[in-house]
Amino acid sequence: MKIVIGSIQCEGNTLTPVLTRYDDFDKAFGNDMLERIHVVDMLEDRNAVIVPTLYAHALPGGPVNKKDFLKLVKQLVNSIPESGIDGVWLYLHGAMYVDEIESGDAFILKKIRDKVGYDVPISVGMDFHANNSDEVFKLANVICGFRTAPHIDRIETEKRAMRLLFECIDNHILPRPQFARANVCIPGDAVLTSEQPLKDIMKAAEEMEKLPGMMCVQVFNGQPWVDTPYMGPNMVVTHQDNDVLAKKCADELARMYYDRRHDFKFLIEAVEPEAAISLAEKQEFGPVFISDSGDNTTAGAAGDNAFLLNLLIESGFDHLLLAGIMDKKAVDACYEADMGSELDLSVGGSLDSNSEKARIHGKLIHIGDILSYTGGNAGRSATLDCGNITVVLTENRAAITSEEIFKSINLDYSLYKVIVVKLGYLFPGLEKIARKSILAFTPGSSTERLQDMNMKNIRRPMYPLDDNFIN
Ligand SMILES: [Zn+2]
Image (cartoon, rainbow, N blue to C red; front, side, top):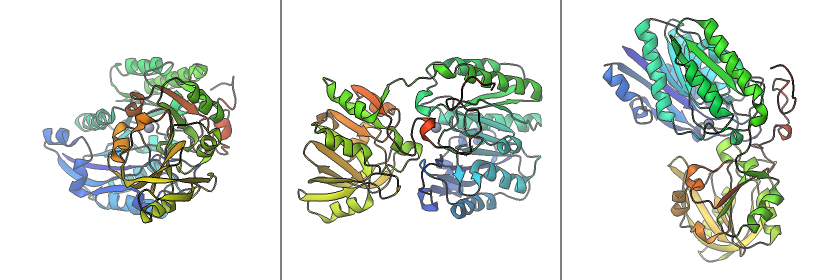
């Protein structure tokens, strides 16, 4: 048995003008990619011949540059032999958006089909926030995805995709995934799999998956920051041979999503930015985390908006920490200065022209590399003590999601009453240290409110822009 494996992932955001480039992808070619994925043992158990191609992962960001994307796809497809393939396993995000191309995931699948033909099964594992275009369902034989948000089941998902590929090969079947869409746009931060109404929907999917011959019943919430007609929740059901039953199950799940649309709620306090700051200040004990949700780098925003920083400065409150803001030029200036020196800097607005700038004056208290939220190195950072507020600057787009990241820059977060982070819901690593968590409805390319997104290409009617229509 000869199995091709490959992965190109980037969660897209069409609201940010900052393109994702070739160098933004962390890449592993050929055998090096085996260390990045979690299905090698399954292939070895079956004595399969592995054909590794390319593993490429970029942090969530703006549309991928077309030329750079084509280069990646070429690198992947060129590694696939012309013939003798029994199956293709892919791990994709499902919400990759490519400049001029739109769905990067559909494009990858089409290029692979052009090479291997339509008689070879292709099984794909994806993120829970996959926005699948109609094309994807015609090109893949099985599509499965994460079943947790926040995500803790990537490995399981990769393995499920491989198990389902084996099922196709062993039974000589080429299933066709059936799908249904729910015309609701619920920001990811209000869609947690352990909470209602999603808990019930996930349970219903789990029950359907027990039906005889059913291969996979998958709920995808989609990702709201992609301005395309196929944005949003998509239910994907794959049965060995009963497409009618599969379609019925997908429709039923989409119906549930629509019927329960009013039950999706933010689990943490979600308020206007000014209210978030005064609410945080009123708490007796810190740290209180405020999420700058409109500039959430983990949702693809630039992370360079000083909007909330300006509000914090104006507030005059004490023991504030801005963790952090992206500004390469400001970081460069800090690296050229002596430790302990006073600096006057303009920060923010260097990547996204819609981002605000802020003027800060402070003492340089630390420089050094900062840990990335995916475990690697996010590049250089600098910390300035500006009196009532401490500001962390990063040369790259970064997100502070855990104690370890604070430690990597020698920052004692426990000294602060209010900490602002460029996130939506807190990652589990911050959740455990936060005395309280508040989500601020800040402006930006990861805004939480569909009415603020100025979408032009999404399908209508769409809740919450429209309500009480027939889904
Ligand atoms: Zn996701």
